[in-house]
Image 1: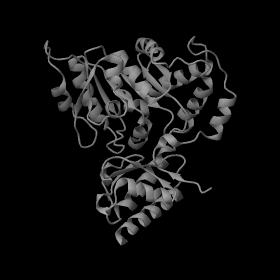
Image 2 (image 1 turned 180 degrees about the vertical axis):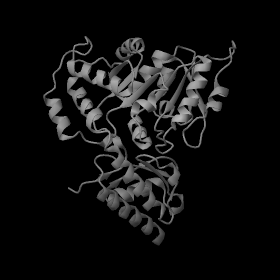
Image 3 (image 1 turned 90 degrees about the vertical axis):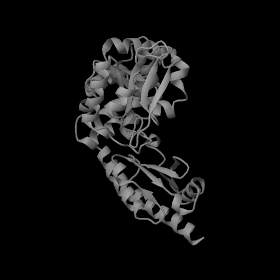
Amino acid sequence: MTNKIDLRSDTVTKPTEEMRKAMYGAEVGDDVYGEDPTVLRLEELAATTLGKEAALFVTSGTQGNQVGIATHVSTGEEVITEAQAHIFYYEAAAISVFNGAQVRQIPTDNGIMTPEQIRRAIRPKDVHQPRTALVAVENTHNRAGGTVWPLAALEGVRAVADNAGIPLHMDGARVFNAAVALGVPVREVVKHVDTVSVCLSKGLCAPVGSVLAGPRDFIERARQWRKRMGGGMRQAGVIAAPGIIALTKMVERLAEDHENARLLAEKLAQMDGVDVNLDKVETNIVIADIANTGLSVSDFLGRLAERNVLATSFGETLVRFVTHHDVSRQDVETAVDAVHHVVSGARVH
């Protein structure tokens, strides 16, 4: 069977051999009782790495975000976030379901909200309006193409939030990509936020899981929300063990994914009918507009799959490609050839 080059997402990464061995040999206990030593080691490592007081192991990025938001926000309150943020776009209205809260969206061109936009969106004290309870940022921003929040922008948002007495949460599903792109330790990226949710199962290659980090008393309250959402796990050390390897051995290599994404973006941008905004290719995500190829997205993806390359629809004329550990430089070159064949074939017909 021909191996497919899977560029749909970095969620498709397979755990490394070292991770598989760590899972097999993991020391375990009941995590709901707080007795799984491997989970405890992962949580301590994550808190230290992120520069926070404590961390909580959760099943997914969505659960990490929603446990965090539920701990911050009460019924009838409001969360400010970017218009296409993951917590609004891809989490099945969970903010409304779990909290009875609503989202106030701020449209941007690159996923980065300005301090002034946030200041204007914060509700005044008014019986007719919900209380603004939280500002949430996404770093890197998925739908904007993996864009990175500048540190100065985060500092500016922090100042606005502090002035209004509102906490700041970061959906940091790919925050290690942001740190590598900026060339700084991840704790420098998240120091301006109160809480952060970080995926271990994307570019870091763990098979499952995320961590939510923040103040110790916040994490203790979040633990109950995790239980409410079905995230109370038992002998969870078998899935926490690869998370430890993810944090200690898989971060620096993300730079390779960024280099491969840049190569892919530059090659795609040279093709007739394919448009790529190279200024937005900062990490491991490439969004291509294929409107001028004459193909629909479904036709384009179908023809690409016939050549054993997988990508994903990202809009009416948009296709997303994501590089990761399981995609080599040669795979990128092969994928480029496949796209060129599909686009050329469309022009011929």
